[in-house]
Image (cartoon, rainbow, N blue to C red; front, side):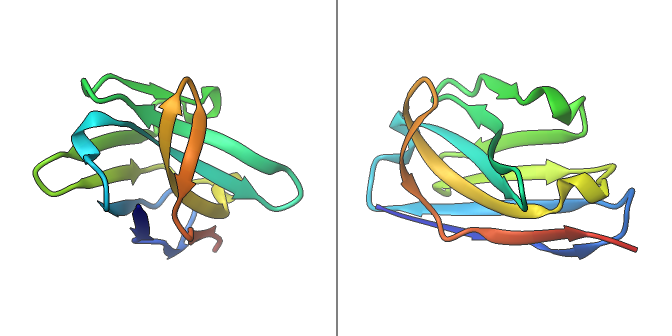
Length: 116
């Protein structure tokens, strides 16, 4: 199993970024997937999840700013982030969700920095 994130970077407050997760080594369409972030000084925080039937859920802090999606034909998952705030600064990880938020495989993470 391999998960590779991309798309992070430096963005100004109010800006947007689109993160991607390329999956390989397993039957991607058969698994729920999630984005989790590591916020400096706060630890791990669940951001969003999407199940194999494309139903999505979000952390309370998202407040409609992020959209999670997946493309099973490309074995890929995405996180479209908009109205970014300094508090969104974190390393964002893509993870395979095997059961109700239990993650068994993680990517290496991609840094998102929101700063002027």
